[in-house]
Every structure is written in structure tokens, then in C-alpha cells.
Image (cartoon, rainbow, N blue to C red; front, side):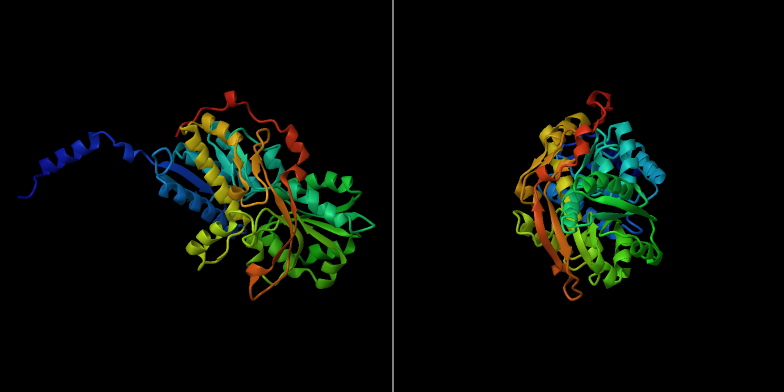
Amino acid sequence: MRPTPAFLLLSLLLLAVRPVRADEAPPLLIAHVTPATGRFALHSESDRRGAQMAVDEANADGGVLGRHVVMISRDPGLDPAQAARVARDLILRTHVGFMVGAISSDVAAAMSAVCQHYGVIFINTNSSAPSEAVENAHRTKFVFDANAANYNRTLLKYALDRHASKRVLLLTEDDEWGRSSAQASRPIIAANGGQVVAQIMVPATLSDPTALLAKVEATPAEVVAVNISGDNQIRLFSHIPPRLLQQRSWVVGEVDWEELYPAPGTPRPLFGITWNWTFKTPGTSAFVARYRARYGRTTLPYPGHITRTAYLATKALLEAIRQAGTTNNHAVIRQLEHYKASPADAMQDDAAVMDPVSHHLQQSTYIATWHPRTDHPELGLEVLGHVSPADNVYDRERQTVLEPLSATPQYTP
């Protein structure tokens, strides 16, 4: 006998009012926000993969506090005003619990200011402007990538020690990351006996570097300090004549795997990284195996340090929620301020420790160079040195001022 419409309606009403079982707790919603189109598209995909791996591992282990973790992705673009609108919409309309991502430091600064206003924890996985842990730091924001000041402290000394005349030319991308990185480099250059003889500003979208390289060649300098990112960096180095490349010491604060793998024939003489898939550090081989099983047949079949850092950061957030025993932001912030990753968890030579003053993870950095190999680009990176966290601290972070926890709105998703 077929059920009557009245019987079906009664059944639906009973389902609607019945108590929710513990195993049906509402999902924990995390927003992954990165500029997924444009010059950071590959970086954003790498970041998403790392965050998603951490989320999936948490769910395979039963979720967090009995709640299934759901990650949604949003593209905030590269316009800070638009990024702020996206953050506000995610909080007020989508009701996300936490945000992770960024890539662009302009995006990170805009979105994290909105998050602080509402008390939403923002995990900055992979934007590396020094200002993220100083001028643009917030009580609700935690920064997991090393920044240009960390890298350049060692890299610029390495380059300047090799020249009797220590003239430096700054190539500076005209965005928050570029300007902040160049500014942080100036005292490092001076402390190592160098002199900044010129600074050339580079547009945030570099279409043709020919005129820029003519200016470089006309400037008397032994060291070229490059603070240029994403596709701009790929385009720049693909146009540098070998003669000009050999005449100067080119130092790049940070080079991501996503700037090397798509352009295996272009050089990068000296740069900084936090991790590489070839490391013999504890935890690395197991992480690479999990990544390769999932993404080994895709673009970027090997993980870079963006993927590793997004994984580490998202995992740290989820573990902090577990340790707090609640999703209340104040309780989770307290846990994150005491976060420490063992060498195996960080996949580095040293433990990584969250600085409670700046909310910036202090971790190992590495000096690297790139040997172009079009046949096997994944094998082209060579590590030249390891720098412990204590040896690459950005001094200005000691004076970072965060909003008091008491003045930070309570938020319990």
C-alpha cells in the first residue's frame, strides 16, 4: 500500500524535530582563500592541496571534536578591497569557523584585518612579507611561512662576503610583499658593509622585463637583490642574458617550486626555501609518498614548500582545536601561541616554534640554487646550507604589538 501525502508530511515533521545524535554534529567549516587565478594560480593550487591533505587526515581520524571538517575554497583575487569583501561575506553569510591561505601579502593584510574585527582566526599559510608579522600582525592571525627578512639575513651576507665592492641594487615588486621585503633588507645590507646604490620598482604585473634589465645593466652594482614573485619572477629570469647573469650576484629572497617547475630551463642563482621534497629530514619521505599517491599524475607531481607549509599550518590549527577542547577562538589562540612542531612534524632539521609576540612561526631556512634541467626539473634544486631558527630571526618582530586578547571579540563556530 502506498503511503498517503499526510503520512509523508508527518514523517518529515518527525524527522525535523527529532534530537540530533552526537555523530551528526554540524560540520566544522574552514575557508581556504587564495587568488586562484592570475599569476599565483599554481601557488594557490599547491596551498590548497596541502591544506586539504591535513583536513582529510583529520577526518580519517574521526574529525575534530566529533565534527567532520569541511574545507571550502574561495578566490579573493588580488585586489585588497575585494579580498576584504570576500572575508566579510565568508564570516557573515557563510558562517565559516576559520580561514586559511593568503599567498598574496596584500590579500592577507586585508582579510586578516576583517577577521580580527569579528574574532575569526586566520592562518596565513604562505604569504611572506615581513610586515605580516609586524605592522599587519593581529591577535587572530598566525603566520607560518618564513619571510623575506628571514631569508635575506643569510642570503645577502653570503653574497656580499664574495665581493670587495659591496654595492647593491634592489629590484622591488610594487606590492606589500616587495616593498616590505626591500625595506627589511636595507639594515641587513648595511650591517654587512653593503650600500644600496639604487632601487628599481617593478610593476605588480610585469609584462616585458626588457626595459627593466636595461636599467639593471646600466646600474653599477655587484649584488642584485630580487624581491619579485610568481609569474613575474619566471618572466624576469627567462629574459636575463647569461652575460648579465654572470656579471652580478643575483639574490632572490624566496623561490617557490611553482616558479621553478613550470620554467625548468631558467636559472635561479641563490635563493631561500623552507623545505624541498628531496630533503632527508624526518617526516619528509612519508609526506612525499602520500602526496605522490594523490597528485603524482597531475601538474606539480612533486610537493613544494608551499604545500608542506599549508599542510603544517592547517594541521596545527586542527590540533589546537582538539587541545583546546572547544572551537572558541580565545581558547584556540592560546593553544596556537604555544605551538611547537618537532623536526619530524616540521620536516626540517630543527623544531619550529610559534613566537607568541609576533604570531610568526620561527623555523629553519635553507640556502639553495637551481640547476636547470628540462628532462627532470624535479631534480634541479641543490641545497647549499641550513640556517637554524635562532640565526634568522627578524629583529623587528620583537617589537610587534598585537591587540589584547580581552579586546578581541569572542567567536565560537
